[in-house]
Amino acid sequence: MRDILPPDSARWRRFVGVFAGVVEAAGYGQIMPPLLEDLGVFTRIGEATDVVTKEMYDFVDKGGRHIALRPEVTASTCRAFVQHRPPTPWKTWYTGSNFRYEKPQRGRYRQFDQVGVEVLGADDPYLDVEVIALGWEFYRALGLSRVTLLLNSLGEPDDRARYVEALRTYFTAHLGELTEESRVTLAKNPLRVLDSKRPADAPVLAGAPRIAQYYGDAAAEHFATVQAGLASLGIPFTIDSGLVRGLDYYRRTTFEFQGATLDSAQNALGGGGRYDGLVEALGGPPTPGVGFALGLDRTLLACDDEGVFPAPDPSVTVFVVDTTGGAEALRITADLRAAGITADRAFDNRSMKSQMKAADRSGADLAVIVGANEADAGTVVVRPLRAAVVEGQSGQTTIARSDLLTYLRNTNT
Ligand code: AMP
Image (cartoon, rainbow, N blue to C red; front, side, top):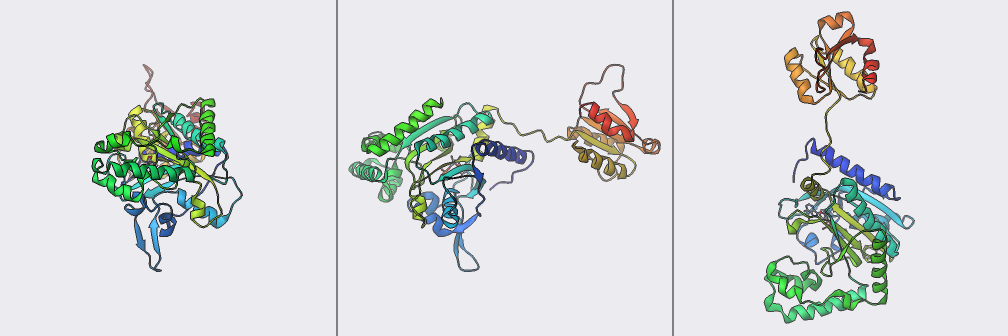
């Protein structure tokens, strides 16, 4: 778990702001579920996923309840839906931290942030397209251009069940060629064996049956409409029949956004899909759902790699230097801030030299300087800190204290 310090923290906030802008323009409202849920909210979503069985931070609270820090937000959203029964389609977005006891490495942390959307109560394949397109648009809004979209369909539950049986038969016949880890996974969920990134499993995986052979008419039609919709929006995608995603609850459409530069185990920037059974599993009425989660940490690493979406410049516009004790700086910064001009100052009544150093370090455009003479005369000195000083001029001006705001406005500050 890491501390996110300035200026990175400002970049995070802006990242969420850009995401909110994209999804709120499409009618999504923010859901803010708690970080803690009853353990059962998560165990019901997937008995065979590492996220649930191995990686959860769970504990018994003082009231004897077995609870967990959320490892993701989809289950919480479905739990909230069951509890509040909002009108459908319920179009939500979220941001916040999740917790998974994983092996930390670049792009993989035990506390990590996601942004995401979930829509509950609509079955329409054009909704899948809308959701994917929002993710795509968001990456564009960040300036990322090397993200690729992988797409798959896991079929309807019946299709998926037949496929899982076919996989079980196939992998069982090739048991000796699978790694020990994959044999353990096979016993729990044959589909997840396809998730293996271990090179030793690759030859067996390459020969495995493909889900497309098992689609019934409904799943095939849904998938075809999703593909046509994406094509009509000009969003390029690659069909990846091995894309099953880590969580068990996906049905029909699944997708993943991949970055170009992180290690292959961490190159999934985000992903999602349909999870038509999840609300029901949490005790609600049969309700289709679709959504995605995008990792904030990893997406920012991808931004670094592509040289886009830098941390915002944290500098203030004006730095006030006051060698009369500090009360002048107090009033001037208050006036400037009230007028919408960002301003900082030095503290502890330091020397002129030390305060000017602080002014330079602050990155401000201008220093507003008050010494004893200025205080007596009711004036201030305005000195440019960054702009090139015009030849023959000192670059600084003395003006009446009462003209300061007007002066700064006229100089476009
Ligand atoms: P998931 O909820 O597993 O489908 O993950 C969705 C996205 O969240 C991934 O593509 C990552 O970008 C991000 N993510 C998942 N787990 C981690 C983690 N441990 N550290 C950082 N990002 C993560």
